[in-house]
Image 1 (cartoon, rainbow, N blue to C red):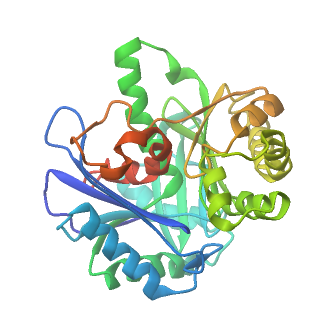
Image 2: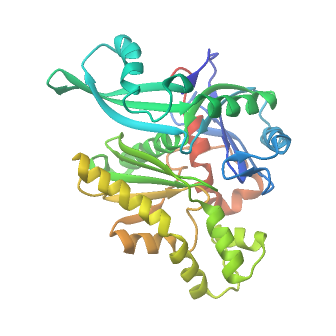
Length: 362
């Protein structure tokens, strides 16, 4: 969304500020394969950020600082991202023109598609298809409310860091997925690029849905449901405390009756299923695709017990957990205490890795 002057450097730091935890990943781009050289993860207290709103700014700033120190990162330049209903991503059709001319024309076009005052948003765009016939082209329009972007950027600056790029969560997930899939195709020579794939990143309060085909986003939306809803349901229906509910969300069911957990997950996944259904309905209505061939879950909710099984049965789609480390190297011991149970935290790193895979100016 926002690009500031970027000093040439062989590594990029991705800073993912979630409602429940902060994740930091530094990737070295100097070799043939991206390599994670630093990593940090710091849980926030529940009262720090509630439903995407920062309730205790100092707690979040301290959390960022502690996470940077934990990771051993000394650079101040970071790439971060925003998400939520204040972010709009939409494909539009415009008269065919050169990118430099589109830069000016996009503001006029955005007024027809963005449900906010055009003076109150940050705008960016990417030409998806330069020629779709009738002297027109297809463009991805992205808009985010300025006040949200400014709050996010000032938070990072108050942690004595410099936000060189502010991206969008769903595109960071896609960026990570594309790198992972390229590595998978090189290994297995698969033809997955033609499949319609749903990338579903379940955060604490927001779930990002991005439906892509051949690295092109067909439809992107954020829905206000995430891990917090499952945690609250587990606390209420199973009589467990917050920490125990967090463990269940992470896939650790302990001694609790699995049938009871499955029942809660099934009841609680209704809004998530509705978001997927509406996304598919939009695809069909727009003529972009008739179905989603497969879906990949990431984020803190990817390992919620029985969720993959429930969603696969509900929608007739092959759901799986996205592995953001596919095709990416990492320094030995970089994940510290999480090294032995890397599978459990890997989905949490998808946005951070996607951000760190970006290079300045790209």
